[in-house]
Length: 108
Image 1 (tube, rainbow, N blue to C red):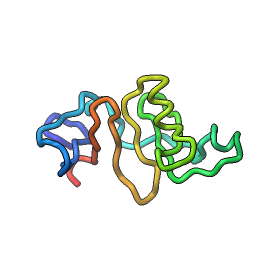
Image 2 (cartoon, rainbow, N blue to C red):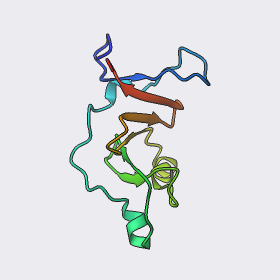
Image 3 (tube, rainbow, N blue to C red):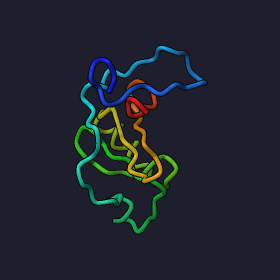
């Protein structure tokens, strides 16, 4: 946890200035609820996806930007929901579209 109790913190990013923040840190959950690990729009079209992202605002699951549909990004564009968390088992980060920062679990 960060000093203010947030389970997430902004990750260092060598390509961006230090001191960037995320306005949504305090509201982010520690982990997603149990979710169905599929991108429904891709599945409906018979497409495959690379990795899945979970919307921390409403729980929508969409495919990543490396996937054909880019449904997580599309969800953000349509709803304005700011943060997605990676559901990939080998990834432990979130992305804030609004503040354009990677987030990592605090204390790791």
